[in-house]
Length: 500
Image 1 (cartoon, one colour):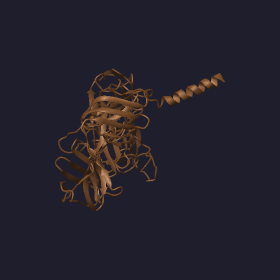
Image 2: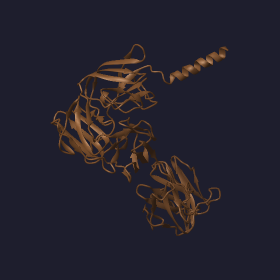
Image 3: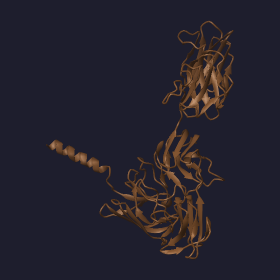
């Protein structure tokens, strides 16, 4: 009985430990910067709140900057980690939800109240903000839309669908209208803005000057990915550089994106009015004004993003050699078919097949077991493949080492037919792999020349020893796979080399 009781107590303590809130802090770009990623708490959060009951938390004299910086806004988080966090786009008061959006705060100094059970929060002080709403017959049920503040005078709505009808701006119960569309200035309460039905990516009003604007959403809004992990944060000169492509305004993609370890976010219209993020990598579901995506592994990725669901993924493609010249032949188009001759890569850019038997026939490279992305060219054994290019004609049946750079399309077929087992070969190489030197030896022939070729087919070293024993210094070469073409008299042999 005692053992069972102790086990039950341990189980309860573990269960409660996952949700226990020991501390709460205000974090974010507007509060001095975001802390570490999920599972990597790092130092204690700076703006710690205080509580007498472990549920109601307060913080005095918190100074915030405007939320609309790169990755801006603030959130509440527990225990100096991202396992438990709360957010909502509403400011200065609202109800935070687990993993919710960044709170779009206004610059000022506030007293903060937060309940870690209900998620209810309030920022008290700073600039007293009015309640601003878009109302009228153009607004579908419930008939009004509360606008978010980006400063004490600027208010906005994003991604709004309106009906044919009229609209006014409600400021703390007072109605103001205009008589022009899509731009104008609110003034007389007897005026009504004549709205045309449609979806609007951004609606703004300045309650000081009265200027308003309705920006129609393009059929396919531009979406980009920005951040230190993908080349830098805005502002850029002109549109964001890493623009995703889309055929339907929902599913977006960018191929061959070079990433380093660092943060990133998706954003629409080359602006921070609409952005998405989440801490998960390499895939997850992004939230509007969510966290920065923490890219944890550098590499070259194909990135997909769904603007409706927020689902995103960073992936490195599979690339295979297909065609009548290959053992697997041409793909049949059967759903779920997997290409057999899959190449390998360590960086998502350079792909290799260390050895494949090819017949004198045609072939091509293709990605992800589909024809949407493929490379070909009439040149052999080296060339530059292009999308939907010509079939590559293998002129001589043999065993080849094959390389492809998926960004440039450069490829090479290296004939390995003369390669034989080291135990039975006339030529031997030791040690292999090596870290410093390769020792080439021949039992009965003089080694005339040795060419060291990298996996891209580039000759990196040529020597003419004219001896039966040769030492080749490999210390200057980068780690990886190489080929040695050894010439002796009229005979040529190729051996594979590995540099550690």
